[in-house]
Amino acid sequence: MSSAAPSDSDIVVNERTALLDVGQQGQKKATPLPRLQIAILLLALLVEPIASQSIYPYINQLVSELDITGGDERKVGYYAGLIESLFFATQALTILQWSRTSDRIGRKPVLLLGIFGLSLSMLCFGLSRTLLGLIFSRCITGALNGNIGVMKSMMGELTDSTNMAQGFALMPVAWSLGATIGPMIGGALEHPQQHFPNIFPGAFWSQFPYFLPSAVAAVFTVICFLAILFFLKETLPRQRTQEKSALDGEALDVPGNAVEDSPVSIRSLFVPSILIPVTNYGCIATLEIAMFALQPLFYSTPIELGGLGFDPITIGLWMGAFGIVNGVLQTMIFAPLVNKFGPKTVFRFCEGCFIPIFVLFPITNIIARQHGVNWLVWFLLTCSLLLGVFMDMAFGCILMFITAAAPNKRSLGATNGLAQMTASVVRAIGPAASTSMFAYSVQHKLMGGYAVYTVFVIMAVFAVRISAKLPGNPGKEA
Image (cartoon, rainbow, N blue to C red):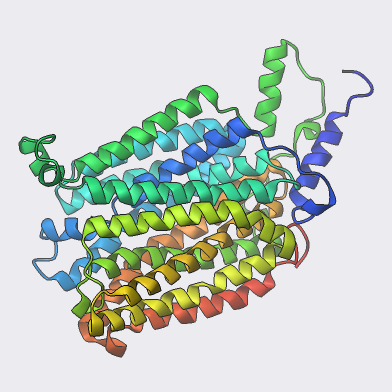
């Protein structure tokens, strides 16, 4: 190495500085993003919502067909919420350990294992005809899946302070695209023998009417697995150094801390600078999963019971429309908004969008009861969709705070794992709790059947107040 080249210790300083200086992008020219690596990472992120949300348009119908409720349609919400929650419950038990493992052995092996588990679970889900089978398949996904925390760590390692907003803005876009494709797959391909009798004849498709959307989702995960296996490079700093050394055929004689600091203990993560953004992440994760669990239930429930009475195809298309609009607008306006107003201001505004979103649920049903599903109902649904786009921007902002809060890059996985574990815990509770509250409100006519929305409006107000504790810029003291 020539004397003019930057030393390894300089590299460490620069990498650590990149974690601390988020929000100062306007002070220097943005570093170009590594397009191929980020494209593969976004592909991995894409398959998550394809697999998980492809079941949303038909999960309530599936519960009814399996006769789990004994014919009582009012109890569908209880079991649908339970099935949706199991992924997050099992993920909460394992994701921190997967994230910490990625700090030691590398991001890529953990990511590959998670993708494999996702594919396996979708095939099991499509072949399940009992409640126990559905539960088992969702538990497989959660137990093996540490992908989300690992992918967020990789994005933090692939970006720096000048392009972090741009990089993290792409993650909701990929998720939204998956959220577009997933419900469309589930809504259009369920019961293929009924919709496409000439293409899917035979007893198999009548016995397993939900296998086709599950199999298509599994094919997406296999494609992603191969792309990661052959083209994705390891981003963990020490792993990169070891790979370079092996390729050069020589050992690097550098101090241990010149490559990167060692991973910190779990106890050292429980400090205000980390816990404040993690708590805020948990708040918006609670509200988001409740909203997404209530939406298909609200859409499918008959109008007289508090919903809109849509069929699975309509639900799939409308939820897919949200993904399209969300992806387009996130790409166009997220990074400019963060650069202009700062991540904290954008986060608080976007988090506040939960309040009108939950308010619009009962208003839409009241209008549908009085006038049917007319143009005004679709106008309110469109307003809710646009508010959902701004709501989703809150995740890009809070991920910047969490990434900047990591003690060092060798602990970025553990920090993201702690945040994702918190989100998984609340997401495990959220679907079952929200859909059960919906069913209980309707069954007992609490506040006219709309009590569930009042609860979440109050929680949204509380969450906005907590967001005031965030520092002005990521990496700075609160």
